[in-house]
Length: 139
Image 1: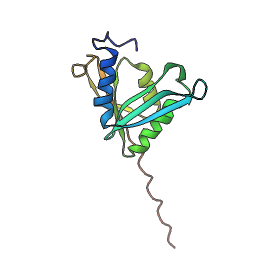
Image 2: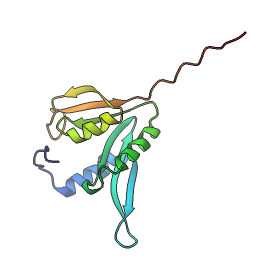
Image 3: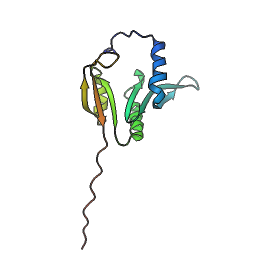
Image 4: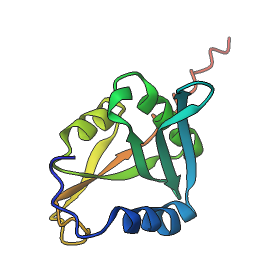
């Protein structure tokens, strides 16, 4: 992610934070594909809790194959009343993906509240309202 500033934390610190803080309270969905031999390769995951999509990540070589869409659809089924997420303003590829899937920007911030200090957007998807019942035609 070229828009991210250099990290001051080690890879191990980030992994520990994700495992112990972020994913600990989330429902997680994993995408796998056949790998070498009989092994499966984890190629992406989504994690959500309480109406928020906390993470959706794919390995670069599997993007644009519908895997992200399937993970997002799974997260939506878990939150039928609606789903919110945060995305960095500079992450134009992710923003376009979410917009294609019906998310709209509902708030912006200057980045002062996140670890990377980058401006971000809050986006929300809400299901379409159910159609009104057809009027009865009593004779």
